[in-house]
Length: 252
Image (cartoon, rainbow, N blue to C red):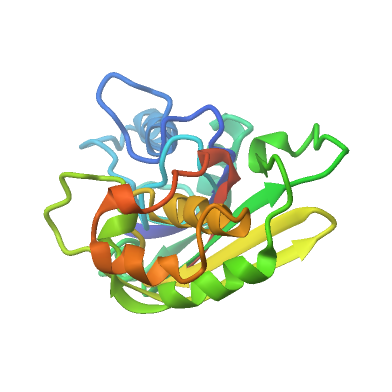
């Protein structure tokens, strides 16, 4: 019987070209999972049509996830536990299905999401973070955290974030809502947490790049309001590297 399955997925995005499948390219998270599910259904003689895994969002190349949510319709004779075990057996070691369960037929991982939490991690210090380097932006000097916190206040609320959109051909609305931004520092590691109802392409990485420029004295905290009002990508800061970004949680 055809059932709708909800998946909770973690992945190290370092060697992938993002979440979304791309024609002729097998280095995507969605593509890898769909390929294993197709293999499973083919072995059962149940592959009637292409598997379509729906993710809560589309992380970019090099971005990681600890809590990506997805759903997929499958007609399989296997139990939920057996499907999850099959996936984790045949998926690469840098992709894990942490949970899998049957959900309501109408559940849609993308359209039903009401909130997302992202974390961006940076590091400054004398000791090189050899084992964590793929998940951190290495900074040339320590930024002023209080300046960044002050500037971040202007980003909170429902606003037009066009200045922080990495897609210059964006035709749809660039209005989004950010409920909370936290900037924490401990032993040279700075972590930015962004919670909102959704984010534009590269939005968090551009906001982080802009905040770091403010923290390093290249801009003033008061510039953030002007950047928002400009609705012009060229007015914002640089796009921080993908490796520091991680999707932590999707809320429903």
